[in-house]
Image (cartoon, rainbow over all chains, first blue to last red; front, side, top):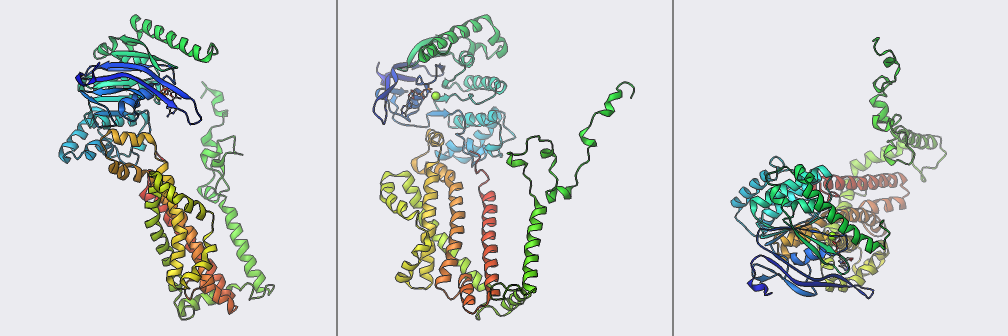
Amino acid sequence: MDGADHNGLLVDDVSMVFTLPGGGSVHALKNVTLNLASGELMSVLGPSGCGKTTLLNIIAGFLAPTEGAVFLNHHQVKGPAAERGMVFQQGALFEWLNVRKNISFGPRMMGKPRKETNEKVEHLLNIVGLGDFGDKPVYQLSGGMQQRVALARCLANDPDVILMDEPLGALDALTREKMQGLVLKLWKETGKTIVLITHSVEEALFLGERLIVMAPRPGRIHREYHLPFAEQGLTISPREIKASPEFVEKREEILSMIWEMEEEIMGGAAK
Amino acid sequence: MTDAPDQTKRPVAAEQKQPSAFAMWLGIADNSFTRQKTVKFGDATAVNSGRLYSIITVVLLLFAWWFTTSQGWVKPIYWPSFEAVGARWTKLMDQGFRNVPLFEHVGISVYRVMAGVFFGALVGIPLGFAMGLSSIAKGLFDPIVEFMRPIPPLALIPLFILWLGIDETAKISLLFLAALFIMIIAARSGVSGVKISKVHAAYSLGASKFQVLKNVILPNALPEIFTGIRTAMGVCWGTVVAAELVAAEKGVGSMIMIAKNFLQTDTVVIGIIIIGIIGYGIEMIMRLLERWLIPWRGKG
Ligand SMILES: Nc1ncnc2c1ncn2[C@@H]1O[C@H](COP(=O)(O)OP(=O)(O)O)[C@@H](O)[C@H]1O
Ligand SMILES: [Mg+2]
């Protein structure tokens, strides 16, 4: 596939080998190819150590793949850039800045006009439900609110692609469900391409229009699903979707798939 | 009442006798939270101020001072009496020490410390940053820093006297050097301590290298830099007094050394008390400044 002809995000036959300082190497990714159309939301699942973070870091441009390349809208990814926004699990906010300054960080660095930026920040504050918290230091916010700031900070730059590495992983179950609703809403409103890594099968099913399950050693794509739940989630309540027979069936299918992988890794000890 | 006859028998927290606020201030009673803890030994937060015992200590010490000296058990050249210190204090405030006002002795010592720390920070912070950010700078300066790190600044006094004599330059250079290595190490560790996800986030938000340095690495290193300044102030305060003991005409250190030569023990004692108070004051001011300037410390 020729990346230069591709509109959207293309991960083209990417392999990643980490050479360890003490000799030896880890094959973190092997021949991973992915093709995301603009505006797609893809979730990535897999046992820990299967290369999810490595894949995301390569797309973000923090790591150069050993083989293959990543393309976004006709050009090759060579390093981090504002076109690809990141949302980390936690602790990536700038604690010396208040909420407003965190959100406006991107536009300020890019030298965007101040008036436009201020309007955008106010708009985003309202969208993520933090209208009254603009002047608060971020460390005074709860975990869920901090992740909403992280989402808003990413959106303020209007990136083409949003990359999320277990963004809701540190939140309690209830907050997490609410935040899933917010991610879905933002996705629909902004039409962004989103790659979302998660540990939670339920979250991956609920949010992913597409879902890939990765397998470890070497990290590779094991299965891919196209799912209706994200689309439904815009009209039907999340609880209802998650309780529906189709959802439960898929959830069990994927859970047992991951169980099997874990058992392989642990040599049956996981039983 | 008749519906729940045993209600009245149950002990209710509000009915228990509350210790007075004064008792809690004195530390002879725990606050309400600690009172309800059943595990206190090993819980550091359950240890209260124990202020009553501090008061006892101070009173006992002062009493011992007054009693032993007024009874003539201690010779005045070893330890002066209350009255002698009081009288000397009035005289020092009035006439100064050797025709130099007391506040000038203190002021010049503080000034030397400030100058040393200022220049130490001015040079040390950029050097520490460079060492944390570039392999070349790290390689160049690492041997010097690691060599100087364990050497107490006091050990350099003779060398500085040889090189620069006993004038102001010698003392400020010594303090500069004492502060320099503390500041280099603090700045370097502040830079190394930055969470990579913050740096990544900034680059992904479109920041340039310089913007990352200015807007992420620098603020992220500020708490450590401030701790460095605080440590440098403390070390320099100790060093300045020692340097003045060795060679100086003005300054608290020189004041107590000269006073010793004249067997003016009361002046020596006053000097020591002043040194303690100023050192404590510097520490307190730095802590206040820190809370005010870097409220995010430890919150990342
Ligand atoms: N910088 C690195 N050096 C060496 N090995 C690494 C490095 N980063 C990741 N790995 C290895 O690559 C594999 C995939 O890691 P990662 O992408 O973090 O997995 P995941 O995010 O799915 O848990 C793991 O075996 C991990 O130990
Ligand atoms: Mg990971």
